[in-house]
Image 1 (tube, rainbow, N blue to C red):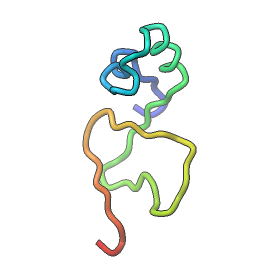
Image 2 (cartoon, rainbow, N blue to C red):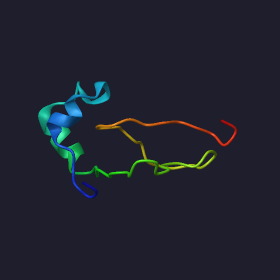
Image 3 (cartoon, helix red, strand yellow):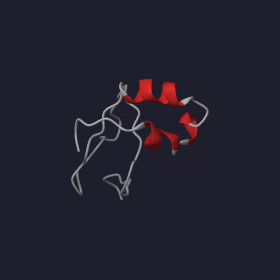
Length: 68
């Protein structure tokens, strides 16, 4: 599913986007990209920085550090 765009309906499920109009969510969706991660894949390293905001559309995320 990497490279696809979320639908305005998917964005409606996130509280942050619920106050946007359908047209605003449609415009936003055109600027976003959906990426899929494999089980066990590291998304971010501890201490790394990113300009991206990540939203979990489905599945689960595990947070862990080397020290446990």
